[in-house]
Amino acid sequence: MNPKGTRAGTYLIRPSRTIRELAACVGLQKEIWGYPDLEVYPLRLFVNLTKIGGQVLGAFTPKGEAVGFVAAMPAWRGRLRYWHSLSLGIRRGHENQGLGRALKLEQRRGALAAGVGLIEWSFDPMRAKNAFFNIERLGAICRRYYADYYGPVASRLQQGLPSDRLIAEWWIRSRRVTQALAGKPSRRAAEPDRAQVAIPLDFERLAQGEPERARAMQGEVRRKLTALFRRKMVIISFVRQKREGHYQLRRMKNSKGLSF
Image (tube, rainbow, N blue to C red; front, side, top):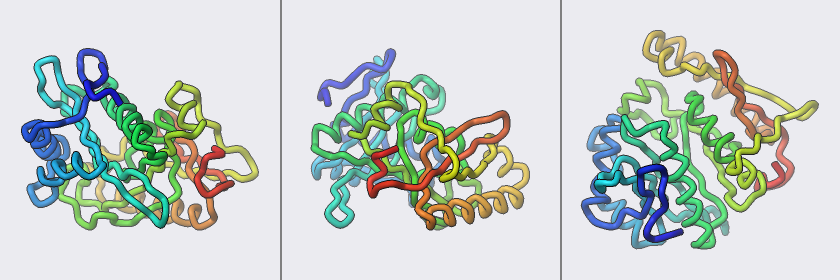
């Protein structure tokens, strides 16, 4: 990773170093997701991440204003060393300019330089935009579903629903990821080892207008994906159609998912 950062249009992607830059990550959480003080990652966490083998990256305007960030912490599961990416956010007015992807690419460069081959993070399975970005644009796979992962969440984006989460596994050295970052389409699941689960593309609007229907739909997706994961199926692609998005799954061939 270049310590001076990389360019993404007029923005600079680089490590957040000063207390002021790290404190901006706290403010961005409140602004982007509407978290109350109780639910934001505090400044102390961001400071510690820079000192214990983690990472905090910011997206900065030409004037040095932080308008986005991504943060990761070192983690272990058994003997597997990996990074857990805590959050990624872009301030309103600066979305859809490639900053999310630029932050993840710089995060990947930092992980590779640190000898880390896997980055994981959680995301809402009902958010089609995030699913497409994680699975198709970045090349992540998913095979774990957690119901109400965080318990009640006061974010305006959660809209009072259970905080269900999928875990994205980003095997950053794999051919799958290399191809995704090069813009090559993922391999679609093919018969007979194939399954798919649909979600609406406009779930946020549904949750606002018909919360009980949204809750029922979330529960149905939870049941379907949980059952498929028990059968050792893994999400390998996300296909967007006119009104729906489809998680496509196939049977896992190895423990790391690197054959996909």
